[in-house]
Image (cartoon, rainbow, N blue to C red; front, side):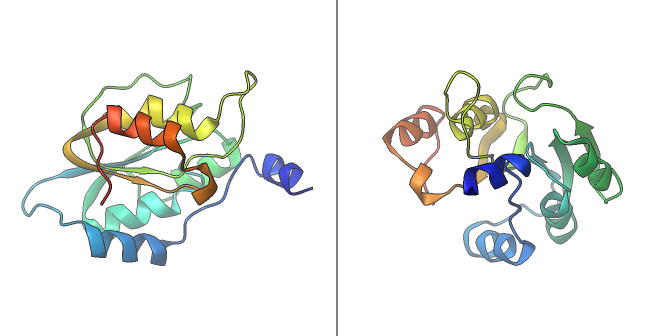
Length: 158
C-alpha cells in the first residue's frame, strides 16, 4: 500500500525548510558579493528553492514535472520555473550551479532503473567546481553504486 501512495504522489516528499536551514548553516558558507545560482530539478511546489533563494540570496531555478505543483511554484519568488520532465524534457549545461538541491523521487523507471541514480547521473554535473550538491535521499538508497556515481562526478562527502 505504501508504494501505491508514493506513486499517487509521484514521489513528492518535500524537505521542510527548517531542515534545509540546519544543513546549510552547518555545512556551507556562501561567498560574499557574488551571485550564487541554486537549482532544484525536482522542485515540487517550490517551497525549498524559494526558501534557499530568499534566505541565502541565491538566483533560483526550478523544474517540476507535475502541472499542479509547478503552478504553485510559478506563484513563488523563484527566478525561473519550468514545468517539464527533468530527465528527458530539459536541455542543460554542466558546471553552472553553486547549490544543487536534489531531492529525487525514489522509484524505478519503466526499464527497472532507480530514479534517484538517474537524477544523480543527469543533474550531478550541473554543479559548478567548488559548488555543492545537497542530496536528500533515503538512507536505504545510499549504496556502493550511488557512491561510485557521485565519486566519478567529483563529489566528496561533507
